[in-house]
Each structure stands twice: as structure tokens, then as C-alpha cells.
Length: 237
Image (cartoon, rainbow, N blue to C red; front, side):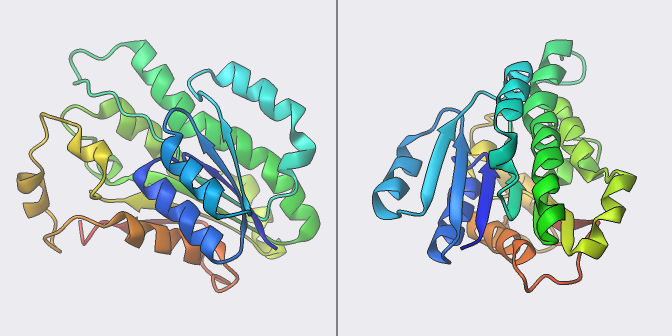
């Protein structure tokens, strides 16, 4: 049974990604920070799911947590970084703490986990890592989401060290996700989604299940060639 770690599993995309892997027989360890209710339903239905809670804004504490669990992290065959934090703030009013919080949740947590899971993948000579970015990185961020887009942009950077891993059947990719029908977008009151959708050549938002399917493919053995890529799934933007 393949084992996968999913950060940010309680988001709309995270829940469907978790469900997809569970239904396909993977052993899933799912992270959440606040929303436990929907993941709890999965624990009652699937015996191949473990969940844990952590506030990723406290990156120093998370780094200590990782240090204590290095052996456990080496057991994973795949890692998906879906953790996301978005505080609406425009360019004129953001504070440095806003950037710290976004960087900790959206980037540093992924980097710390990736560094550890790769050690186990190298020994097994097999592994799949999928990180996530945002379509906002392509256009300089939205009007009120600069810290979010900038922090997500870091997941599009591939250290040269990764190139040494591709020959060991380890693939590492980043999904640049477009506007998706999730609560994250709907909760931004200043955002006119109807106007935003008109900018998408496909003329619709992505569905969370669609994104989950892309993630599942990239983590499977069927993905035998695609690696080191930033993959845009945004309906043509």
C-alpha cells in the first residue's frame, strides 16, 4: 500500500484529494489546522486514514515537530502540499507579519516536509511530490492578494538538487492552479467572481474534483515522465 502525506487536507481541494487517494487504496496521512469536521467523516468511513492538526503559521514549532518525526516522514511514497493561507490586503496596506504568515503556511512548511520525505524516497528509488501555486503568480497577484501570490510563487522554484533525483524515479512538479469553485474565493467579499470568470478563456472556474484528479495522476506510477515542471491548470489563462 502506497503512503501519502497531504498538507492542507481540510480545504475544498484537499478534501477531494484525500478522498481520491483513499478510494484508490492509498494510506493517507492528512493535515488540517482548523476544519476537522469533514475529515472526521472520512475517519469513520475509511480505515486507511490518519489525521493530525498543526498551525503552520508557527513555523519554528513545526520545524521542531519535523525534527522529532524524521523517521516517520521517510516512510512516505508521495507528498502533496496544499496548505493555503490568504489574508486579503492590498499593496498599500500590507504588513511584514502578513508576509511571514503567508510564507510560513504556503511555502516554508512545504519546503521542510519535502526535504525530509525525499530522504526516504531516495532510498526506495521512487517518489512523487506535488506542490501548488496560484494563477496569481502569472499576473502579479490580485488586487488584494499580493502576500498570497508571492508566497505561492516560491513553490515554482526548483532547487538544482532536485535534478539529481529524477534518475531515481522521483518526480517533483508544481500545479499553478487557476480560479477554482472553492470557499477560498467565495469568501473574498471584494471579489466579483462573475467578472473574474469572464477573463478565463474556458469561461468557467475549475472544479475541486478536477484539481484532485490532476494531483492523483501526478502522484501515480502512470506519471513516468513529467517532472521539474510548473503545470498551469487555469482554463487557458
